[in-house]
Image 1 (cartoon, rainbow, N blue to C red):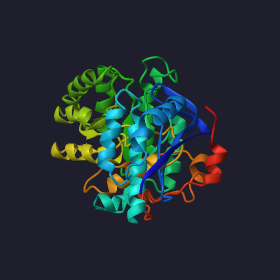
Image 2 (cartoon, rainbow, N blue to C red):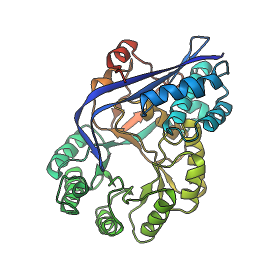
Image 3 (tube, rainbow, N blue to C red):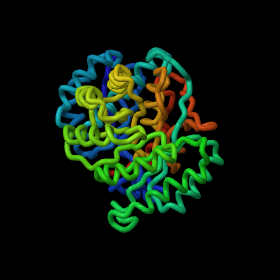
Image 4 (cartoon, rainbow, N blue to C red):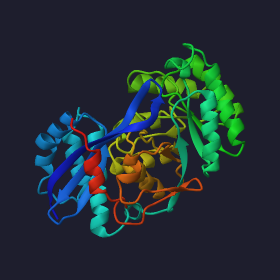
Length: 375
């Protein structure tokens, strides 16, 4: 089997609500669908978020010349080749291409990816991840999520930092968390994320209340510039709080995560499958975290609007003995429900691993053409 081409398809669809996390906000969901084509008619599926013109030029001029004619089953060697070629380019491109190679490998072997990785379990608990909203709206959504069978949630706070409350005011943030605990009950797992909008003292104040409310994790609370400053700021905070501190979604590859993990700046490590370098690298980072007895709970972008990254992360988590939870974006659109021939469904708070070869999901080509956009 040989690689003959790489196809990139940008897709987009209006979001059902303005999606907010930290200072980021968007009214559409989407990204770039990656397909690695082979001479045997088997196609590998991946995705990433990046500028389409830059991604197309990079693939055509720097990646495809290196991969064309190569055996796609040599995943480790091709990862190293792409890593060397993509230094300085959008980090997600390496991860998206690697996911597509693993999908190809699974299809060629007739096995789902998690079995190729060692298959420890066949389902993972998810946490539902709604957008940042006013406390009363989030409380209503929480009741709905519990009724749907969810068992865990991630709340987004920092309303005063993004114009949804008075600047610097934390009252609504406390109301979000307290209202959610009241609506969900004591047995529901709650995590909280500020997406790097708090300063040190705001984080200290919130962490105390989160511990009192039994929060399972406190995610990315601090503003920081650069990896070294981030590590030092998180170390300082982590030594003063009791609620588990999580983070690292902005780091890439084991070479960056090695320092974060070795210095134990977080209690829970959160690489993004696509952003960190793909399935190949996500497994390596999980191994590093296990050496230091840290929790492992990958980040998943909620801006894609489809489930390729969710499913890729699911396969890795299902190959591990003690992962935490899988992020599950809260809102469906036709992009999510129609892009694949069969959409993975959460049942009683768990997402089961697709049992078909590779990722186990297949594109609906008609829907792909319908959601494609010109960029």
